[in-house]
Image (tube, one colour):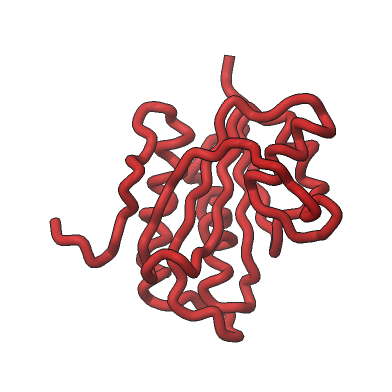
Length: 164
C-alpha cells in the first residue's frame, strides 16, 4: 500500500526569494515526483490546510528561511505543536497545522518534514536570486529523498559554500 504524500509549499512569488517554495512546487509538478503525490503552493500556511494534512500519511512543507545562509538547504522532521492563538489567524506555522489537523480531524500524518531554503533577497521581485535559484535542485533532492523513504536527508544542512 502506497503512502499518501502531500507537499505544501509556501511563499510570495512577488517577494524575490520568498517565492522559492513555488519554484520547488512547480518543478515537482513538472514530473519530479509521483503523480499520486499532491503538491500545493500558497502564499502562507492556512488553517484550511488542516483537513488535507489529516488525510495524508506524509507531509512535506517547503519554505524560504531568513535564518539560514542564502542558498543553504535544510530538512528536519516535524512534530505537532500547540497552535495557540495562531489557529485563529490566516498565518500559521507547519507544526501548528499538524496540531490543528489532529485536533479537528483526529489524525496527523505518520511523518512530517520541513524543507527550508535560505533566502538572500526578499525585496519586490518575481525573480529568485542566483544563489537561491541554484539551491532549488538541492531542495528537490531533499524532497525526493523524503518521499522515497530510503534516505532522509541528514540533520546537517547543505550549504552552497561547503567544499566537496
